[in-house]
Image (cartoon, rainbow, N blue to C red; front, side, top):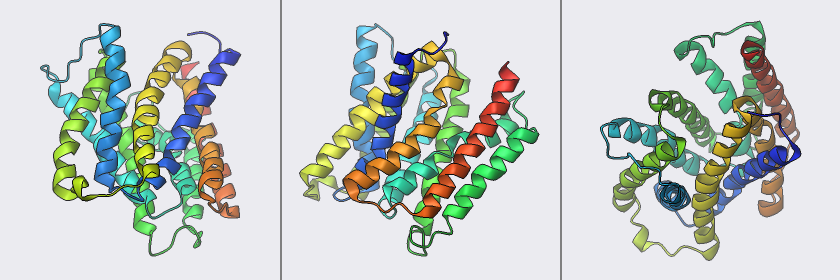
Length: 295
């Protein structure tokens, strides 16, 4: 790993922008598709750039090897469940709200790391960070304009989806000795296998008449936020490390709010801004504690 250069910050910004763009595109996709179909199309189209990279780099895909159970479990928890939950939730809430709720992933990971990873226990700084960050989310839930009795459960499902990402990340440590391209390609294959029959059973996509905007959105969601973004993430992690990469947590919700306003005319309330600042402070304090542990 090396000291970050201007090009590294540029790539980090591009990655954040791609991931942030997923939220308003999910919203557009929900106009024509159900959550299971959206999840299926995301992993289906997302698999192409990853598997092509493995092909050209001659990286063996071990989706059906002796470790297939781990790939299947990670695919279920890291892709299938969160993609469906988030797609369902975004249908009923503003996309900018989803971006903020998803930005709590570093806070959730800090909580889970305390219980499942050695050397990641709570300290005073982490505890203060968690309390401030999650207080911001509680405050956000008090905004009756954004969250009410009609979409309260949808907002909770988005939070649950973000937690699934963290759990999936912890389980991935079980096969951390394998190449990241192999792991990602394998879990995308298993996610596709699991979602295909669910799509046929529950949503019957052949009966749909989707708009062109929704079709373009699900294709974009697969190729960019699910496929290419992961490849870019791997490059950043390999070059600059996890702490540098974790800064996407600050940038994604900002882009998410801006893009939601530009493309969907979504309202930006004062409580959104206050909650966002609280989450940022919480993440900063938790990450600062982690950085001290590393150094």
